[in-house]
Length: 127
Image 1 (cartoon, rainbow, N blue to C red):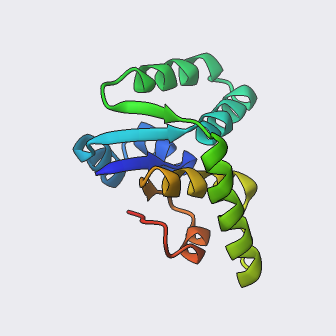
Image 2: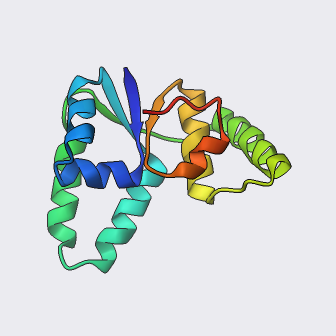
């Protein structure tokens, strides 16, 4: 399985939550979307452990099978489709999560996230 981690699941991984640790260990590849890294670093900037958290993130990104996924022109088409669908349904979600969904759909990634608002996107495969 190729999985994308949402911010809350990366935090779960760092905290040793069994479900997330097992999923990451079993995954063929793990992707951290660029928006997740941005959210993490924004959080680090407000905390007392910024340097420690940054080191932990860098170590994780250097692990075999772990990659960052960035947006490109094709991503913007997926984003637009997600935006349109959610608007028609009357079920908006946060902007960063629309980017996450667009990247997961574009790259056929299984999304590991706790947020229930992703349920409004049935085409999004989740674990």
